Image 1 (tube, rainbow, N blue to C red):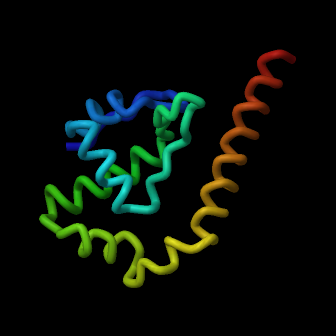
Image 2 (tube, rainbow, N blue to C red):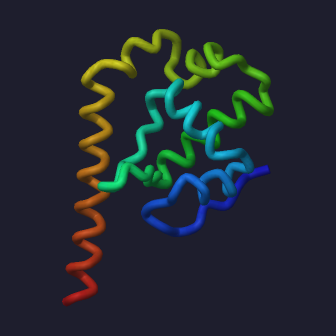
Length: 115
């Protein structure tokens, strides 16, 4: 079953749980295990997930629930063997580059609306 992701920029953890069909504590656990899922945080530390995060969580759920991988096996499958590459500064830098790209797209869309 493919979950439909609504057309929004950010999602709170409860919304993500409903989309994935899992409880929020499961999402928080996956977030601690899989470094590719790094939601933004509000000032009050609430998690804000992007579509990219939800798509990654859907991959993780498929590997764990449908294909019956262990956490370690799912990590190997997602990261192509060694997980060392995803835990260094390069992964964090890529995350921020992508986040800045998303912000730029949003700002350009606003500029286009305003004329």
